[in-house]
Image (cartoon, rainbow, N blue to C red; front, side, top):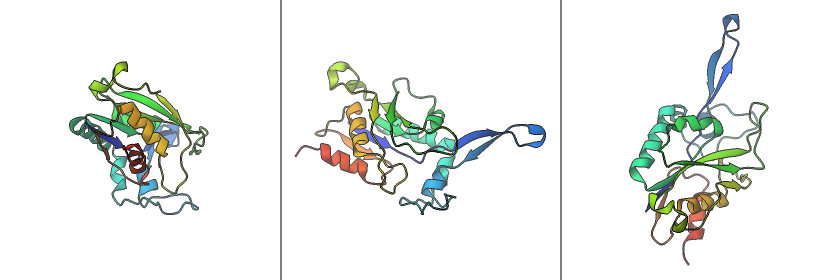
Length: 197
């Protein structure tokens, strides 16, 4: 089977501000893609990204995320998309059989608000032949694992990739896995570690 893992730049942050004339509200957006992968504004102590992409800003357009979902449905038997809690809407409506898993990160970083997000959703589409309890090992829909601090924004730990592949029912002997957004190399490393010796 053809499987894919997609960890794209996350959708932009939308927020409501009340500083318009007369106290009226307005919706503003803040880029995650350009900030963390392009040449956008970062904190004064944040270095240039290790994983620089001049075209990162195109992921601030929600239609790019929808196109990604459509590509995954068209080209792969099973897939996973990493996103943020406020980024889930960029992918709706989801295919009926898609599931949303939870990666809990005990070392989640504070953002611009009071809330520290300690979890990230992972949208998965398990191949139809691998959804039944009898088709493979039982896997929890939650992973608790710290995010690595290796200089790549959004890098996933190797355990994350292994968990996602277990959810998808990955068979190292017959499946191919495409990493659509290679960055730190952790996905490839996890796949290599699961191949038969």
